[in-house]
Image (cartoon, rainbow, N blue to C red; front, side, top):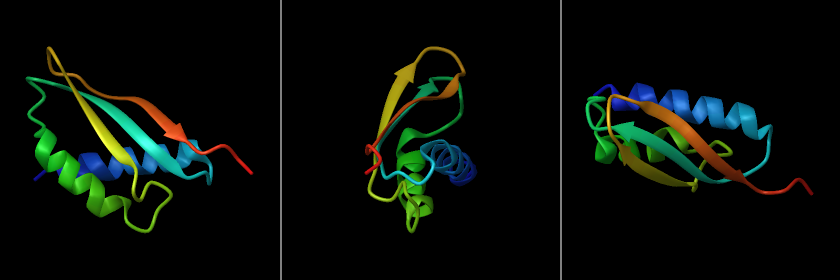
Length: 80
């Protein structure tokens, strides 16, 4: 299940970009020919996000044409 490795990469990049802020939402685009299962990615994302600033974030998956796999957007809490 390579979705676990994909989820790990997404969480690492999002956590790095969030710079310590709590992440609320992450949006990814998955191409229909990417060989990535949205369901498996969503499950894996929840597992690897545990204990990180991404824990509890909503993962929005947008189906697109082609073989793309893109981290499109993320929402974070404002710094206090």
